[in-house]
Image (cartoon, rainbow, N blue to C red; front, side, top):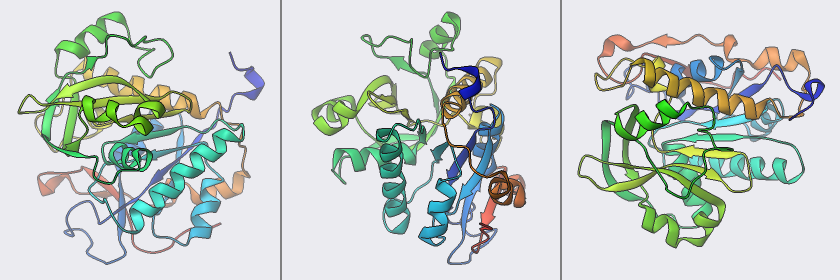
Length: 304
């Protein structure tokens, strides 16, 4: 157990913005626009952390300074699989590994697209992703028989909730790509880096990897969306039951508890100047689908 005086009770999470405005240009169609869905911010805040937005297309030196202010990183869902965004994801992922290799506990949580991109990076195979019918789809999680729950992101779950995860539709999927367990295991880079915790089944009963955790690093990735259960309402099939909300909360608590192990203590003023609180979210729930709120970034507003 970590010594109390070394626990970071004020963890900061960097969330990487994604190209577009989150609403296909209906909110802002500027060429340099990027966004973070507010559900990701609330997900982190619900577990006791604050957020600094990592604006993917801001100058590299500013992005690096922001990375030096945070205690962990979250990669969001989305669609971008080429260009500057992917290069930035690659660079931040290498930064995460470098920090941990140097002895600083620095967690990464990758959701949906984030999972897909780091799988492409780790596997060294840009074509490793396969087509799945996982859009607008709530499902269960099937645990790998060889996995011990202790020490994984599921360790806080009660036995009852773990059982329900295997039978009830408690997790929300929204993706067109994924990786089958066979493809995953056949790639030695992936199978050596990650252990598969769960699989899920798409609308066509095809099985894909849905939750993984690094064997060596504090890196966890999911093909589904834990943030949606508690904080998004745009799609009718998103689970909102008490059990579904507990799933969201447990995942947020685990990730932020990992960030509390970080030894990084940046200057308070630099943190305050760059928190997400310096930006105003845009309500877009009346558009009928997609996100309820988004933070939109149209220019370099970094204040370091």
